[in-house]
Length: 139
Image (cartoon, rainbow, N blue to C red; front, top):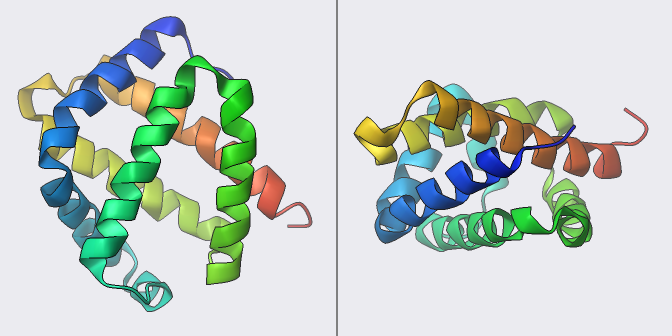
């Protein structure tokens, strides 16, 4: 699975538009995630504001690293290991991805279009595939 140069650029450009509203975006994300799967709320032990800051910082690193996927893979593998220790299961990736897409749609407003959505879908799938293949090898 790969992403095109155009998709990388779309994702990177769109994320720069979300960064100024990072706190609101994180709030939308977690509200949406817990709406999709209320059981996931039990996995979060720290304040949601702190969690939102971590989410946005991690997204920023991932989005910036799309130009060098080889360096992103070990980062995602370590992230996957930490998430398994928190109790994350492979099945949790779908509601997370869907909540992220909804958040981007809300945050980007009129800039959200089918091409941008597909770029983000492909990036989210790439990230999820790397993380799940590392963390859930036996599943």
